[in-house]
Image 1: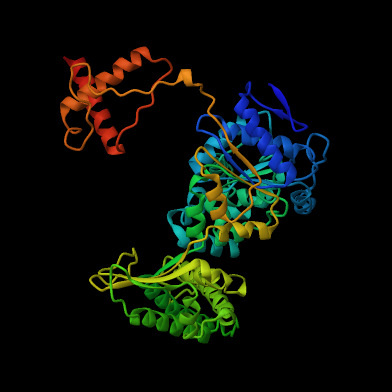
Image 2 (image 1 turned 90 degrees about the horizontal axis):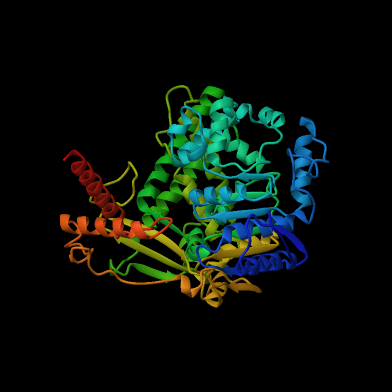
Length: 557
């Protein structure tokens, strides 16, 4: 395997590297060594992922050998800690060396990245994060979706009623090499199904002590998801965002919210359920837990009803334009309901306790009389909304927002409490500065943020939108030379029929037959396969079905 000396670092690369790949790895190392952010553009097919992994892991290895078995400094020389030492060792490890956090848009993309890692000589301690929906193996909870699944999991784990979660600690102690070889979510699920431990919590435990962590974008950018990543050392960490060409919109969406009145109606119903559950809980347990005070839920319900009424009373002159104000208007709007930075803290506490109460209600712990009707805690959307509005206790970020209310003629929510035919309103607070989300990483103390994609240009405007300094930049050429490229148009097929894929002609038998003949003819002379694009998936499926049926007819005749 070739080794390239770049900026004083030996980089193992599985193939002979092209010049543009050497340049790319040089910029990655420059960013990491200097602790700077980087914008790296390199066309699709130039091996970005492999270059990123090899250069970043080579740099990480300059600090010391990769971690092993959840303890020790790495390599073969470190001794394995006992079970009692392991959690302490993990904390030491995760703060000793910089952690590389590799993010991409989807799990399928991360699966491909991990496949690339297997092709290298590097074997860092790794973990990959996924959702409960992807990883839960509990026979009942796995059937739920969204926050209902999260709440069900939380409740069972808190009561130690999930056998899969109960054996995670012992499994980790007895399998200390887990994470030392590249694995994917499917591998963890297979372990869970065959050995018993919960795949979701295995991944969470592994993430506390790793060299490299793989995660989807939303786990890092969404504040709520990021809060759940306990044990990860952000200080001096390296963040790599692959396929980052749409990062601005993802950041802006994460800092915005839309509150539908139909969801607000569900929240009011949940607050009422909490009042009933709390009263019933006190009656059977003869206790007066301060955390579960029915008066708090009554206040919450009254506030939500007042908010619903206030949204409904706004005068909207034009349904097309809606009702729009500067972002700072949100504070005036809410202050009339006595919702301020100070009171929001108590509201958030009440919503958190309500979520716990609803978990118990959904689980049936109240035994009789009252059971929560909700399968999803809508109240948590109010919590997320308050977090965004009163972030940091200040109002400076409001200048980057717009306050907007629009009205639709009928409900658009999937809620079971829809009132069909009744006008529904949506209160929105839209962020127009993606940099607000990226600034959070700087506050966490990350070392470098690397954004890469095949299409990032223009780099100046991207850097300005994200409100970050990117001293290291690259716009790479393609590895394919000009004499290897030919672009042409084939207007007609072998029989002279036009290759027109417009809606009017693409459904015809003649078009499908002619297109199939063209592809067959090209396949005879073009080596190593073809990549064929269709106007849509449905069109592709129809053509393939026709070709398969035609082959069968010819074979039978």
